[in-house]
Image (cartoon, rainbow, N blue to C red; front, side):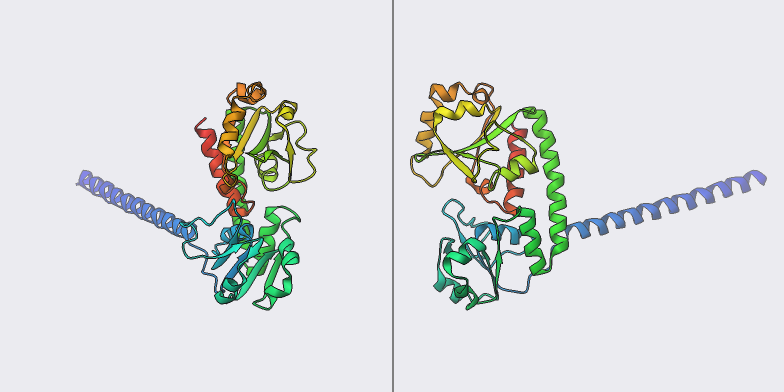
Length: 307
């Protein structure tokens, strides 16, 4: 009888433990579901009709979960039909289609300081309240915060930057593993000549600040966004790694690059000899915006993984 009681008690305790464990697992599953639901939740829809007179400001707005209803572009950063399937084309930023902008009837407009001055800010203010952002002042994170303050999405901006910085750190670590800690430069090739990018936008901040590459000799001395050079001075930069952007706008750029590749000067470069020359494209690398830089980071990660 005593053995039977012990057996029954043991069985009862086992059942209780099993139930408790199952309840704990259910609770954990529910917590994970809640967590996933929270992380997958989208930013609520913006309730204003937005026009962006800058493809760069468009990228910042998109990082905040706002796809403009209309945007201008540049010749080298055309509208991606998949990404902007519902966005109206408002012409080039240098010469916006004002008739299309008026017909769109936006609730608010975002414009870069440079073009607000060139076009006449009053033209835009007559159409809708206009927000002017100075893209030449500060870095892309500053621009994102400025816009976030206007559209009341500061928390979204902070989360985007947090995620971006974590990604940049991962890519930086991968770059050191794949490329070492040598120097880096970025050049653009077209029939008009060679262009070396400096420390300023569009490529400087992402390469030398966000990812943390060491600039090649002479890159820091470039005072403007870029500097036109002759091929004869390429060896002076003594870069360990070169990122090459072949212009998609200027006809004949591919031929110029092929010719350069066969040039003894190019073939003598350290980066060329060590197979550390990488092609990048205008989109997203020249899209100096929060969203554009994120896409560039993703592309750089892919380049490094495939090296």
